[in-house]
Length: 154
Ligand SMILES: [Zn+2]
Image (tube, rainbow, N blue to C red; front, top):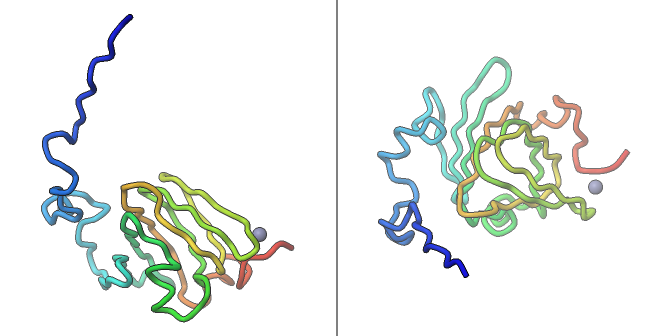
């Protein structure tokens, strides 16, 4: 019988509990996390949001931390039972799952384009933050991209 060699973990040098989640030096080197030129930076419900006015719309970089769930962390701040934003863009990192009110689900893993209709809950899966590059036109986003104002089937 052949014995399996114990696997060396790349992370074995530093236990997870001692690794800072958003080390500034690492963030500065990583273009997905570094300070974004010309952006308005906000932190809401643990989510980091960088927004720039671009042409007649906006480009946003949204970073959802591991463990984030819209219904837990954002719902108390926005007063709607579900997230009523349309999300159109590029999921550059991480994995996001979600549900609509009618039970339809989505499971999105980077890298991929994403379209999420208004009226959803969503959460980050795994230990990696999810980074979404979004295009929007504020309250007219759903209409602009031809989406319903709330998830439904034709
Ligand atoms: Zn549905």
